[in-house]
Length: 158
Image (cartoon, rainbow, N blue to C red; front, side, top):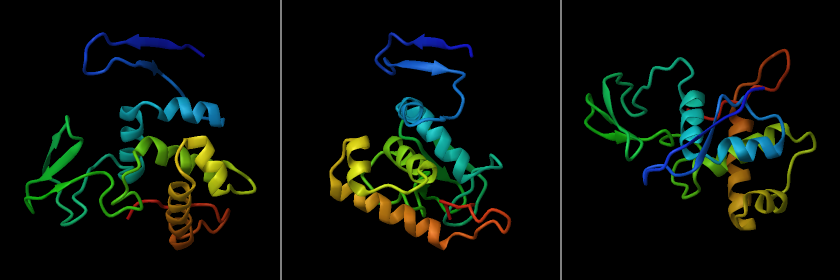
């Protein structure tokens, strides 16, 4: 596995980015993978719109402009702004996508499930926040259609 490190020496982005990383296999990999806010955002966009066509969650419009600095889209049809979190379980949550993506990874990959205390320790959030996150994640999994063969498919976005 080739690991390239790109370090930006500007104020815009001064953290190290690990290019060409595969999707995480362990909790340590997941924390490293989703620690970059840009990668977490891109991963959430990929989950929300797997075909790559971003649609307005309000009107379904395909014409929009993207404001990169704020990571929001402006729909040209309904004239409203929207984010990747709108009309998903992540909506109205002050928790960043980086922590949400790690929580999703932990819940899906832990065979016996996880407790809110374990999630709180891993994400360095309060137990109350971890409980809130798990409630939303479990609700999304319960309400999602399951794959007939495996029973494991969960859709996190509306």
